[in-house]
Length: 196
Image (cartoon, rainbow, N blue to C red; front, side):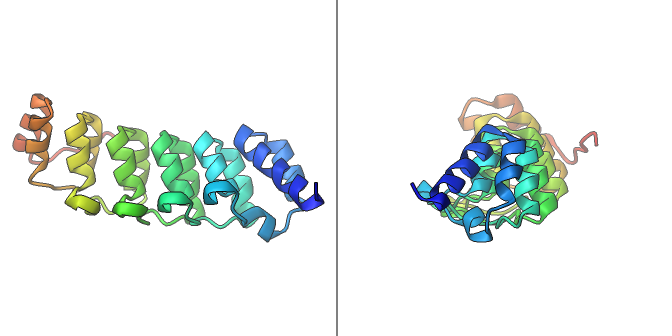
């Protein structure tokens, strides 16, 4: 096995496991190419750390110059991975580092759309506070608010609404999928303010 391969394997193992000391040790000798070159499925070290929820490893990789918005399979960036898994601390770390918060993956799904659809309200709050576009329309003409309502994620719906999300179809989507109370709230709500 080549030395380059050993270093890259060590970097990936440390990022996946959240072994910050091993990651920092290996980053000392790693080039930017070794840090940013994708692994299988176009996954980078940032994707691995974000997916597993290792915010401190993300910080170390960002300081080392890791590319924030590299797309893996399906157009997913590290912030999409963090939002999908519900790792709000990782979403916040990537936002602070300057990751693109409204970058669409395949089918137009943004990190906010993914977080809202999965019911990860902490991630929704972080992304909204960072200025994510709450009325972005993903593929198929759906919004974060519509899909959160359809899935019955009440707190995500309240958060999105409080940040200005609007979708006239959301109440019908909630009702059609058995979330009558949420549908009523959406029809009756004029303004809702989150507790910050």
